[in-house]
Image 1 (cartoon, rainbow over the protein chains, first blue to last red):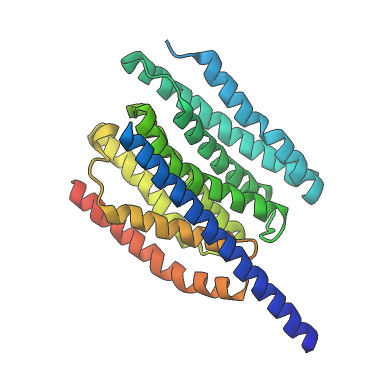
Image 2: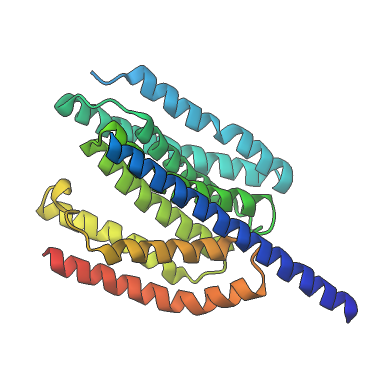
Length: 43
Length: 241
């Protein structure tokens, strides 16, 4: 029972970490896009 | 005159990527899976490159357009679609393993990194009619291949294939009545938002780390997103007519 709880928690943590990294990736690409947009407008 | 040598080199680099990926799939999942993957990805890429080559030659004759950095980014998006098609054809259903990670990272590259950055880069380096066509068609092809992947190993119902397939049906029907260039003018902003929601659903279903919560969200979202998108496509078609 305890083993199963631990496995479920580890899987939940991996899931949360995965989505956090995904959100950071999307935010980074979005910031880069905004920067490139400004660069294109200034040109 | 289109720099054919340059185009062939770009195509060969993209095609060359098939070999190491086939070897990796073959080593992990067996020779048959690797062979199927290589043939499907390579075939998909060959057809894409031939069609783009024809379109580029025609555009070059009319406007003198040469393929630039943005076009190469768009072509690499096509390669991502071919990768997903290859994985789907390989018969491997391993969302949490090597195949799942390859497909998921490919979707992030094609649908987020390239799709979001090629617009501002194109505006900086000057847009072209061919570039717009390539961008739109790479987007549609990647969406269809990602939907196929999401059905194969993401656990989504086959109904998610309907919107990307319907887009092609409408396009072919529309091209019987009017030139391609006139079919895509003035899309409302919700079309893009629906496209983002669709891709997010695919990304969630294919996420190699997706657990119980992700599966539950995907199961709830899919039956809502698909009819909404089909309705949106029908509405857009009525407006265009």
